[in-house]
Amino acid sequence: MPDPRRLRLAKLRIAVVAVTALSILGVLAYLLSGGTWLRAKAPLTTHIPDSTGLEADADVLLNGVKIGKVTSVQLTSSLDPNRVIEVGFAVEEHYLRDIPDDSRVGIDSANLLGDKYLDITMGKSPEHVRAGSELPFAAPSNVLQNIDLQQFDTQLRTIDQIIRDLQAGKGSLGQFVINDDLYRQFLAGTIRIEKQMRAAVGSQTQLGQMLYSAKMYDDWVASLKQLDGRIAQMQSNAFVHDPAQYDQIRDQLVKLRGALADLNAGKGAGGAFIVSDAAYTAWNKALASFIQTVDELNSGQGAMGHMLLTAETYESITGQLRQLQSTVKEFREDPRKFLRIKFKLF
Image (cartoon, rainbow, N blue to C red; front, side, top):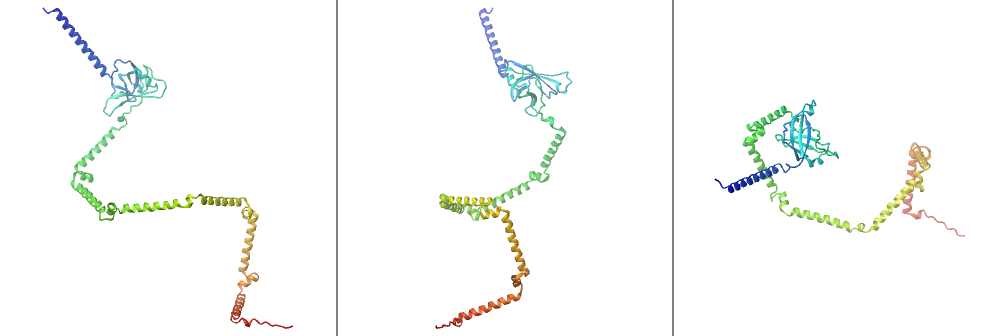
């Protein structure tokens, strides 16, 4: 017969092991649930036209941050096509103050083949949503809904045919991929260009001498020194440092501006001529009279006009000038011939 004392100790050990195992299991369950197992949850709902693969226990995100889980996805008896499916989800209660009551719920996925989740997009209302409220549904951002599958399949077949043609060596690109001749030609062209570049920058060429010698550097230094010298000459100019010349030119400009202002104001003879209509009219009359006089001379009117147009007058004047020239010549040769002075004695 077993010892009652040992039997009690064995039962105590079994009880301690069981309690410890249950405690560890509870801690693991709490940690696996993200530490939110015992936190208060707030139920919310939304209605959608199609679940699109959404299942219970899916994540609920608020602008990308996980805040809860989907609790139920079930059909409704509503005839409204946008309220065929009712989705119930629970979020942690302290997140309610971060969800405005005009927020919208959408179904999204991380990639084309990923699990679906509810994504709540925050609104702008100052009032936050309350437990048990319904959030409106927004159209999902599923890329497949905007793709024509038949057209997509056609494009895939076209791409597949292009790849097959490349693998078969069809076309220039296929020959380049499959055949070594084009590759060798390309390699030979690259080597030829490299040789030409080396020959161009060789030490025997002009470009190479500029690159490998100090000639280009010396030319640059000489140009910089010349530029520096010209700048120094400009800086040493008295006009740059002495403001007297600048003031003199400025005073002259001020005087010129004043003279122009006086002319515009009609001051002085020039201003009166510019501004006064009477002076302008008198000048026009004088100019017209001068033009008329010139026209009369050209037409032979008057003594002067007759003299200009008649050849006799021209020949007479020419003869008198020749006679005067002959007389002056004789006077210069023998002045005593023309100096006849008579003295009378009284």
